[in-house]
Image 1 (cartoon, rainbow, N blue to C red):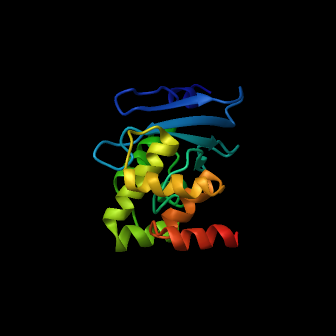
Image 2: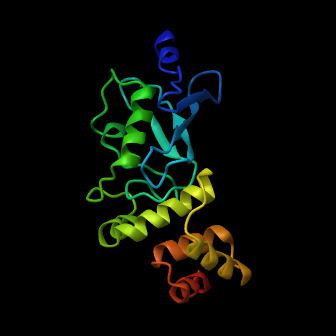
Length: 189
């Protein structure tokens, strides 16, 4: 429909875009740029957008395809905790609204309504480590500029032991970058 098509126009200013995955508007691929002055700056985040038959009366189902370290987004599945994708959806909202809201969420996390308890915990208890970890994930998964050399060394050290890089990053991130406890976690999996 023209209504859905209108919502598809991309705006380079805010660096968001939407592409069709199939011809009948049921699945789209979104992309947002990490907002400036956040650990996500310089990263590009791919989103899977599924449009229900009841759209626009029900919200699209959206999740991050690109891995991200954020209290309101699952570091495992990319599931998002955001009110407008649940009970605060309004039929007047467009996909552009959704993408801009996700960009705003990256800039202002809601740690008290977390999707990922481990990340939210780190965000609240060790904000500096959270920032460094989020920046590292942005670098590895979203193409943002290089981050903490110390964290990179720890990743390389565990990868050299034969562990999978993604598993290593998750283990270190969730164990406060402590190589010993991260190793224990990797061995127990």
